[in-house]
Length: 145
Image 1: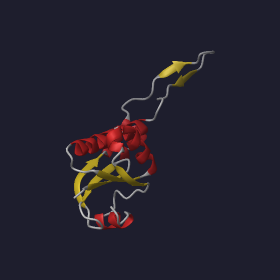
Image 2: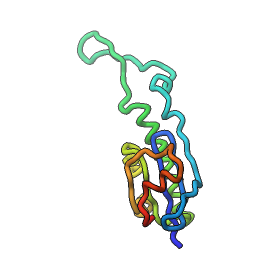
Image 3: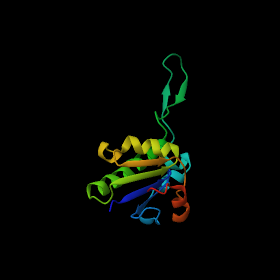
């Protein structure tokens, strides 16, 4: 019998479910949490940004990060999720993957996943259902899962 995993994720919480039967219930097998994703931007840094002189003139201004700390954190969380999925794929724990994730997380996940793991994706839904119970999540999935 082929096994399917369902990943439900947003920028702070990811849950992995196993679905062994068609139209059957989902069993949560793993939960990943990224609490820093709920923090305010000023709580993520311990210091003010550095200051620099203007290239012309005598003005000074604060230096900014090339990408926000929040975006960097979400990308790191996506890599952690991708690592969990890759480990499950290598262990043969699933052969089909269905992803339910908010749009920005779905994009970060796809960038972080290996080619063999990407090949297992059977479907994708760009919704934020991370806080829903398993019955609500199952109702949003196709019956062929």
